[in-house]
Image (cartoon, rainbow, N blue to C red; front, side, top):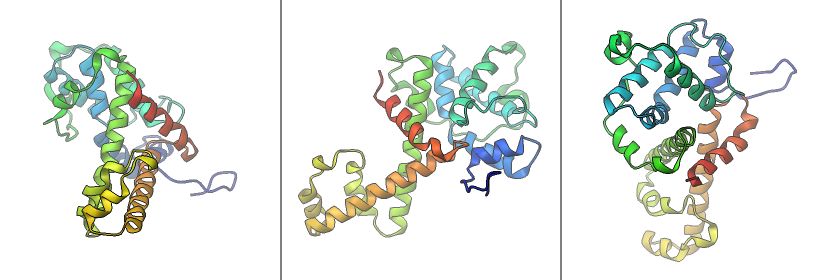
Length: 242
């Protein structure tokens, strides 16, 4: 895709949604639904923090997505500086603050076709979050960061398995987010029955692929790929707060 100025930029799911303006473009509908299905849990955690029960949080989150996926819902709403993360939180705040009659609300989105979400372990994930030390916005950011990392790890594990390196992945995954000086290469080499040099190469390649997948995952939620580094820093900071 080429910009008006002649430069080339990456097309992400969020740019597809914004470019279409939610005018019923099938590609934009699919892109938005994929984003919502991937990043629903941070909103559920945000709603739970505000005192809603598990069941009501599920209903409210589902109802929010039913509204969000309606035609023209995005029209007139700012893209919040090009970040889907920021847009989604602002939209939820507006949704919760809106005149919402809980007594008359139907389950799962007021009768609209619901977004298929896996609620099975949602509340367990929420319960292990340190909600007492975080503001609702910071809780949302931390849940978002954890969700991003979970998606990346899932993709990396699947890739490793497809390449016949499942055992190697399981042995080396603990080294993805530690300093290079803290990696026990000799121990890893012994466990995998390879030379230490080969272990170093394997760790380097796994960490390199992890970073590439992380950047790719984050980029899908931005309208400007140049914001990836900034967004990565924000999410890593969210993980260390509290």
